[in-house]
Length: 417
Image (cartoon, rainbow, N blue to C red; front, side):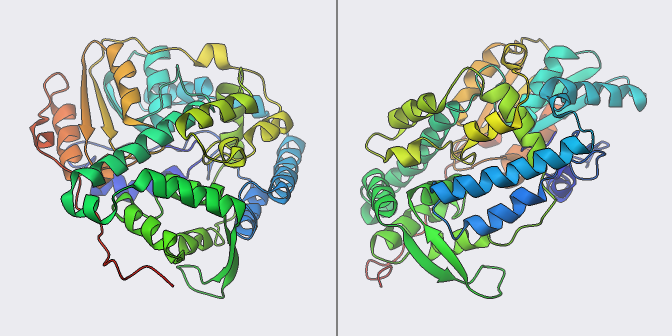
């Protein structure tokens, strides 16, 4: 069960195969309803075109909001004109599709693996359709009972704090970058007050594109793992010395979009029915201020990775499903709970509450790994294989003694222009 919601599931297959999921068993991958290759497909090429254009706008600028809402309005109008019932795209129906698939394939019992939003889906599936499930593995946990838009801020703060703590634990990194929290706050505030406008060639090549780097863009590049965590201290140091190249290149990469591959409609139907209800922009801002005191409100009122989501939801207009979805999964089915300490999207600590309700669960926290742990960690791959072989007694010994890889250290005389 893939993440997103809305990501092209089949894009994940090379990573799943490289991780060994089909080494000793069949691997079944199904695109979730509304995704690429489905009928109907809830892609929004209008939003993809906006995202390509957005790199030249302030992340949280009024013009960006206006253009995004225009794109969302256009997508919604097109989908509904085609007869699409946007309220039918939710986690309950999504889970029922997988239950139906098992019956259609006449499989008595199977194992389930989901990451990111797919962990939310897998836990919902386990709660509503436990029959036929032999074991469940969830990776980078988004717990159904707590996922809301304000919740994202706690996860982001936890992941960034873990990265900075790991740097402080490595003498070379601590010596070279002694106060990363202060440096990040300074750069977010500086860029939000005085955004940089640059002409940058995207990493994939082509003509230079206008690229705006402000405080919101900086944070969201970090949440998107661009640059990678091991390079983050070096990138922030370079930025503080007047060299924004790493972040600017990552921002410019967004100017190249595959129009129609991502199901933004599925994202909005789930976010607006399950994550947004019961909270408001002021709740997001309050959570942001708690996570990052002293940061500009214009940055903190936008949920990381989901800017302008409340205005989008007012336009998307799907029924409130919070009560039926925000329910903890209580089960005795053997479950493996995998988290990465550097995860800035779904903080590792959220796995604890999930595991408490799963009486036969095994929890594994992998140091130095970000979002979607298994493809990035050979140890996590071994744990997962061991779990599916013996769900009640997996071998987790490889996690003992693991440490984050060394951070990138640049000479003190580099990084300035």
